Image (cartoon, rainbow, N blue to C red):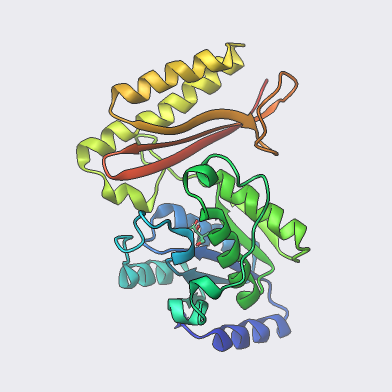
Length: 282
Ligand code: PAF
């Protein structure tokens, strides 16, 4: 696996692959790779001939009081894991390569509406930062297909919308969330949890499942959400949001909606965890 921080080297390599008729897949990450990321790379290998991975902790998607400085950077270990799963090219730019004029002089990409609520409301500017970096990485790498984890459900919808709105010729694939045996969704931020917090954090998935089960049994949505909140607070979660929405628009689910998503974000210890369940009403 070649590693570079240089945009023209990425372009040269990808151009050579495309001239040789190869299909290029791309997996953007912020590093501190876990099984979730490695699954994205493995899936990417099934969808294309070559796989480019990026590791860039994007300052533009962190708020002033968030964990940008403390975000785990484990480049050597990440690199080793990427070699083991067969990634072909690693792009690991510095902030100066990506934002040479500085963050405040950068052109932004903003996807309207779908990013206004949930993580968009709690983390103002977050999705603008995500859409901007993903757009920029897409322009650098020019992949045929890009893969993202479904754990960041709202992020995935925003990226799909951006690609559609801006007519980008890239197929976007969402890959199912990888979980610990406890059910806890894998996340780089799980590293902030103590062993005890990690055990309690598994309740997030149980709470989401209890809502889905209740909906399938025609339970009343708000009381199912209220019971789930009680469950979460009992183990020490501090809730950011928990809601049931139309899975395509993220608008409030109506009685006619059959394609639903339960979205949750909650704090436990120092970690802000997100999770979701996308399901069809039977
Ligand atoms: O999901 C992430 O890790 C990041 O938001 C992404 C897509 C790599 C953009 O920085």
